[in-house]
Image (cartoon, rainbow, N blue to C red; front, side, top):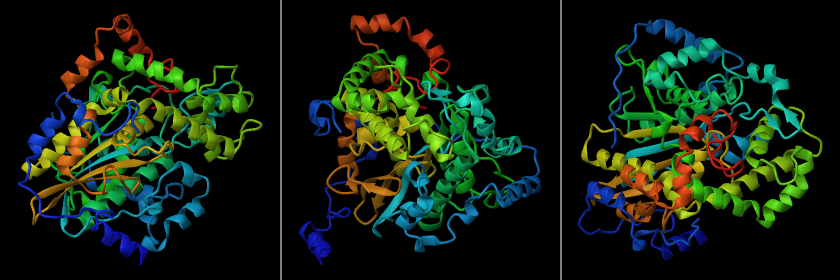
Length: 527
């Protein structure tokens, strides 16, 4: 009764869009272009100073390999006892409540997302989904860093971490079914030679497969956004150039379009990747001097907070770091891997302390990316791509209906902060943000909704926001490539000095910083 009364009081707007007669429709193309222009103060979201060219889908000629042979290999992998593939993940259907599933999975449920934890909320009947952008963090992985202070040496467990990885045959099959292109970039991933560290595990591959299968049920079987068999014109997939995110995209696609749903004319679904100099799915780090200087300033502020200093006093000895030199991101990511694999933890460190590390890291990253200048430089170009894709989906029936981006926690956290929905909780493995565009065909109005791990996010006053309002809300955090370059290369003397170091730091980003690409140990972009 209370819910009904509340709904009546706000005209239904509290729980979804109140689809009242609208003024003359606004062109999405015009609204999208307006959102990309240099922001004015009145366009910025109502927040404090630290506020909480679409490329066509690539075509690939089918390779010269036997369909029956691949089908047999996939079936063998599915039946393998150590590969609990997607066919068995949802036998219980909606009868298994999210809380029961979390209770069953125990500590794993804190650190990995599974779609059954939170079923997808379908749109109102009057709305038709036109486009969805999916941002997916990679699944479970091995540690990136090789140590935690003096407390853990991951190299001593090298064979164990190796045992968690998919076989070479399985990885080769993924590469054949869903090749990452262009080859001259994808065959030299940033983490090349670092195996078994920082690699997607069999568990992680299964998690990404399950998310892909959930998206299939949602947008193919229920919402009819995509056809039952793959149409390469309607799907756009991009990944950062690391093996774990490449394989995240590959397994997502095996869930979205299992081999049984592919035919001889389109057995492959290609995945796009970019050189680091063109990457937008991770914050720019030292490639953008203005970002680097501001991020360093915020890192120093965050390290001086009472919360951080208290945590350092409590955990410094157990982690084996000297005073003032705790690497929080490194400690969190390595200890989480050890916890999930039931490996021996350092004395005085248990599940509670690792939870505290996650909360502290969430706070530190939120402190950085809620700054509107850092947030804009970290997310502006990817939001411009999202708006371009939405406009294209409205104006062209042959434009991509689904845009998939596989990345990292450093992909999701800045996006959540820019959207104003980050709660300082660390994104679990296989976490995902989905931005949906829908049309009310009766009124010719367009609506946008944001989902995080299948839960609706309140970006404005309702879960479904008029497109024009959403574009205005996100206008400050949307920028063109030219605007990004101009804002990065500011005229401040400190930035000019930093520019001379960009090339050197770019070469070192993936070699000397096990966990990061950024400007500090703790507020860097863990990838």
